[in-house]
Image (cartoon, protein in one colour):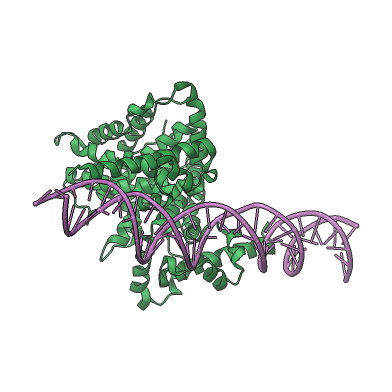
Length: 204
Length: 204
DNA sequence: ACGCATCTTTGCGTGCCACGCATTTTTCGC
DNA sequence: GCGAAAAATGCGTGGCACGCAAAGATGCGT
């Protein structure tokens, strides 16, 4: 069902996560109190912890949502499509920029990226981001299993594929954030997955 | 240098990490206080936080040390050896059981594994374990770059390989812990890396 | 339209944790 | 041994995660 109740919950969750990210990028991780985030989202501090077990989890929630979409997107690909073609399409789809890109003015873009870099350097966040990826990988493994006729409960293969895809996506995005004048993310992702499906042969 | 100072520090670090793991496996994550760990290691509670930023980090420290050894082991392989041969050898070497295996009586083995499973189910730990893997991947990327003539600062390749290797190792160990009557870890690792180097072709 | 059952939010209290700072103790090089 | 450097310790503080119970909002059947 998608009644008022559930939509409101999702909205509160999104508001909390977004407030957490926005404030942290602007001010730095430990200059933002849970109290601030709750106030920015218009709920009580106690309610914050009904949605997220920690400040870090709130920040990582967007990453979790995005990563989850990969599994959904993979399920939506035609059944006959080769696995790695479908996987690449699913990843690129999930990483496609949403409509919120035009919200932030492009002249603040560098500032935003700089803030992001600082934020992602926070140890407490790194763990939570990786954990979000790992949670999504479990769903991705299900989708891969369904497509390849393997069994997530007994076979290594689907988990291996999911973990490798997650690793490739992570490496690509970190490379993107590391670069001074970066190429578009979708190219990095495509590159990484192509190399992965080719067995990661050493260059030259 | 490896003076008394450094050896003592390493010993204290190891004692704290080991105490944290042992107590957590026995009693559960939040039934163990930092105070307990410090007492078990014979240091003051304040000293604990001179070594580790959190309880979770102390527990993940062993995993970090083991993962770090992969990079060292890779550097120790002959220069002419093909990349993936060297990588597999390095991983298997780093995961080889240490001399502490005989310390714990085999009749308590099942109990230990059960405790491990419970411990690794703790959300706060999962993030820290993954982070430990990620930190080790940075070093592995350096070693891969040295071996393949790539540049960690500008090329995606070494990071991609390191991330994929980490993902494969993680998937293999999780599969090992998941299985009821598991095959030996080194076989799972070998399998996973072989499939990875083959481009993860779908079975059948 | 109403009221009951269910879910959500909130306030309060508690125990633990991470860490800054100043002090004491230990180690190292000479 | 001795002075400098480093590590261990004690104390204090601010914040966090969460259990619990009361109050409020929502959904559903009639």
